[in-house]
Image (cartoon, rainbow, N blue to C red):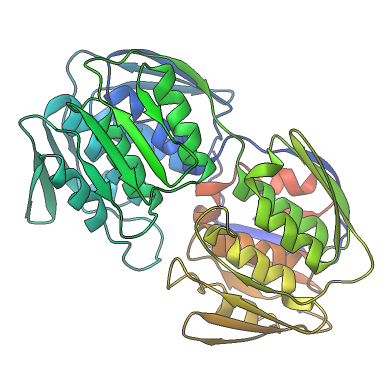
Length: 418
């Protein structure tokens, strides 16, 4: 695991080559909590060696589960008796910890969790999670920053989410698999990571239909069994490296990714000016003489992922014309903009829109990453800037990318930890 404090990048080196992305951060963190549902031994493969995985290991350890990560393989032992409380010092590191609510209520009938932390992206409401779980029979109290949930037995119900929230869909799923009766989630999230979570649950004996659609049906079962699972490839990491190739006017292949998990992103890469070739488990991208301005909006899957909005923004900084980006998912996803402006980028914001006027050149500068995807965008910006850039706050980058420096060095960039 990387502990260095800065990344230094010398810009204007064309990237070429191949790399393989590991499992999706947004899938594995949720799959790691499935052993809460049933005792036994589990193995997850294709697990990225990132700090968020380490954080979730700490959460599981405090609940009494045993974890060991070796060479992208994670072994988890879930004992007969597990704890019910995740303390603040762990939860503040990562908001994904809220996902333990559903499975703890399902197995133990009780859960205690401090209000989650994580990136500085402003409040991400957990109310949808709580509303769904309350409808299933849970009761919550908040005292001194600790959320306590209790249930005498969860019941299957129909839940219509006001927004296709990934987290609320997943928490509801994890509670419903052991609930009595049938649960129907309307307006469910359709993201590939949700589909992969369901695949692992079905291996455990859960009865679920409709994953990948806006209506998921769960027939509760009395007992689940341990299983093994290979984590789906990380489409956000893949999109980041595809952008890096294109931003440096290079070419390359990203393996370990199903192209069907990046449908709108591939369309936008083509509009920007890339040549794209896809196979079952890889995407090849090459620069074709010009980067064009585009308009894009983030939306739940199959729209452009909000996690890739800052990355596309950085890719478009030197594109010909004016690009318009509309952020429809998280209202504080524009934290990358003040940093790239220090590099000479021309970006204006208004409400949920960013207007990017392509410039002829960017200048290397010291910049700071405030969250995972801001960090990725600053790497993309620095790769196409004149001179050297120093990026601080790389602990955020390491939460979502397994040694991004080694990956980019293998493609021909001049980048190092400092």
